[in-house]
Structures are given as C-alpha cells and as structure tokens.
Length: 443
Image (cartoon, rainbow, N blue to C red):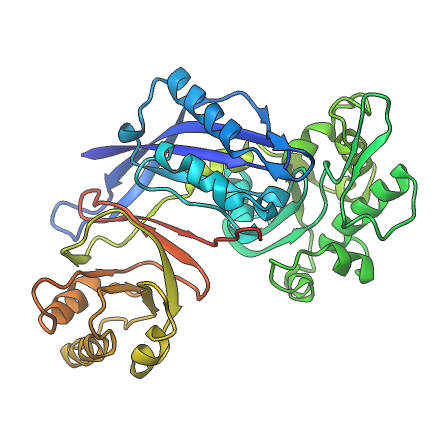
C-alpha cells in the first residue's frame, strides 16, 4: 500500500525564478511481519512553470511583491491550492540570497508555500538539490563513477562531489553568468564586486572565471584566484581541494550557463556574460575529458527542491503533544549528554538535540540517556534526532520523566550537523517527513 504527497519547489535565483509541482509516492518496503520501513519510491513532476527573470528593484534588490504575483499566477495555472500541498521547498539561491530584502521575500511567499517548506538555502543545500535534480547522483549510483557536478547559475557555481551515488563534499564559487551585465548596445551596466578588483577586458574576465572552475575540478593548480572566488559561506576551499580524487571524474553541468555550453547564443542574448562563459567552458579543460549536461539544466535546482528536499525519518518514532509542522528548529549537536543544559542555555528558541545514539542499546543505556535529556532540557519542549534506530524506546523513556502535557518528539535515522535547521511534517504512515537545511539571509 502506498501514499502520495504533493510537493512544491520554488527557486528564486540570481537570474531566474521557477516553480514546479511534483508528486512523491511513499511505500512500506518492509515485509508483512517486520517493522515498517517507509521510503520515497517515485517522484513525478506534475507542473513546470515558465522560467521568469527574477524581478529586481534597481540592480540589487529583489522585488518580493512581484515574486508573490508570479507564485499566485502559477498556482492558479497549475490548478493547486496551498492547502493541497504537503511538503516542498522555497529556496533563495546564489547572489539573491544575499540581497537586503531576502527576509521580506520569504514573508511575501509564506502564505503560498503550504505548511511545510524550506525557507532559504545556503550553498551546501543548493549544491545537493542541483546535483539530485540534474541526475548526477543517479548517474554515479548507476555507473559507480565519481561525478563532479557544477551548477553554474547567475551569481554562483555550486559544486557537489559524488562517489558511488553519495555526495561526499560540497562547495561554492562566486562564478556565474550575471556577474557582468550589458545593455542592448553592449555597454557594461553592472559589474559584480567580485570582479571589480580585476582590470581586464570582458573576455579576460570570462577566462579567469573558467580558470577558477578548472581549479575547483583539480584540472589546474589552485592559487589565489581560486581562493578569491571561493565563497565565504562554504567550507574552506583548501578542504574541498583535498577531497578531490586522484583518478578520473565525470564532470556534470547544470544551471543557466550549462545551456550555453553546447549551444552558441548571441553574446548579448541575455544581457550578460552567460553565453560567453558557456562557450569558454566548452573549450576549456573541463570538457576535454568525460562530461555531460544534466538531465535538467536551468531547472535542476528547482526540481531538486520540489522532488528531493524531503526525506523520511525512521519508522519507530515517538511524539506526544506535537503540533505539526515544526519549522526551522536550530540544531544543537550533542556528543556528551551531560552538556545538554549548558548547550540549550545559549539558544534563543527551541532547538532539536542531535545525537548519534547507540546501536542495539541496552535497557540501562536507554534509561540513562533519557534521564540526562529530561534533566537537561529544563522546562523546554523535547526534540531529539538520532542517527541510530532507537527513537521509540528513548522517546517513551523520556516521556515517563516529563509532565504529561510537555511536547516530546524523538526521531531516528536522521543525521544533523551543528548550524543546520530542521523541519518536521505530520506523519506519513509510521514515518515523519523531514527537511534538513541551512539558512542564509542577506543583511
């Protein structure tokens, strides 16, 4: 027996804004007499919006009201109402996520996004969604090849290294097609701050951006140019370089610039350097080995948001007095349960405790951990996420040590890192849909 969820994905990017509606099929893959094992078994896209240029006020500010109007229009065209959507993601990506009114955009969109939505994405989540939406993860899983996926958009290039179908590293460069813009006469009307330090002609700037991508792929020795374009929001660039494999890799491309790699466009077709950047990539070291355009290019991130942002917790979960959905719970990673009280005292809002847990725990281990958690949380609601499969037993033990009206949630088979955030939706069968994300709001 299967259940279906309807999901929305909305990507407000540096250059474009897009929306997709998809349907996720969820099935119990365990046997009749086994503990249920819920999994998303099929993802089907029901509706794709046209690709809109992201509306701006001037050169730098996102027009939240105009984006709201786009979403309202596309919901009506798709024939959906917000209360018919079960899950999904609204992500603000690339340079757009750094604009002054990123928070105002979220407020404009909140009533359209349904009850369970990612608010905005940092480069790590964006890299993951683009790699999944473009089919790069599936390619690595199917062939066993190491794949480096590059999602090259208007302001940034999001990177994902994939080995045996698993994303092992992510990163981001300030490399994109809208870093330099032209008017209809070919005169420069905008030059991104990341390019203003260089006194070069347009083609020289384009070649420099390509060199930074080659360095990120390990095809050119990295230098200060690579470090200049590596984004502050990503983990260290040197750490990224150390994780690159020594053997051959397949390079996969998505994003708006990917559409300009194998198809030559008029240099002024989009009023930016996207066409020139795409053609320079085609002639570079990036395309001398095995490479591919993603199954989705400009739509990769939005399809990743709509189809791949949600995952399921384990099936043996515990919850009591919880009003779903839970949104934007900050994650506090706990390695020593005796530190819970101290760690929670630094939080302004209710947090979720992330722990490894125990494999095949004894009764004594469950009771001891439950007592430490109950004592450490004080009067707060209890939200616990475990990697190991022990949530139901631990949740029941915690609940016995709390007042009966205290909210308590314990889920497992979920790994959360410090600095991330968690959304949890209402149950689907015995499991709970969750979305793990990073929030970055421009100042």
